[in-house]
Image (cartoon, rainbow, N blue to C red; front, side, top):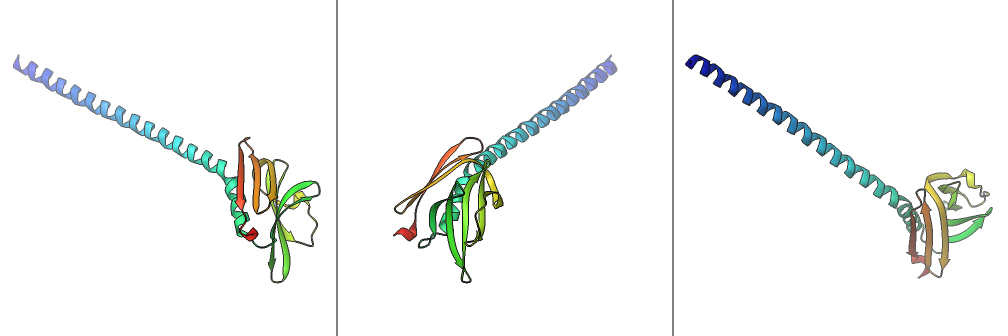
Length: 161
């Protein structure tokens, strides 16, 4: 009888160890899956947050880079309201146009002598509205991105002081 008991006891120990290892494997897999899902959610949230801010940050940095005396103006070219950023390089006058065209925010860098053609620019990001206005030394740009999120950039121009 004692031999049967040892076999049953030994079998029970083996089953217990097997169940414990199985439970460990299941819990480890569950932790990996939960961690991966949390990571995916974090990355998705960061991506959406960056996409929401890219247009405003881009416009703000372009304005700051070209903020000089009489370099920033709001103009209508071929029926398109543009933000014109002028600069002089090696004695030549150049202009960077920022504008909304066909659902995109565009940038066009060209010689000031060249004609403005909206389709010649480079698409920066999705945008359905780009409305710059200049009042005194305050430049205001009302924008709507491709997802319909509205934002406003207000920059007190240093050159206006």
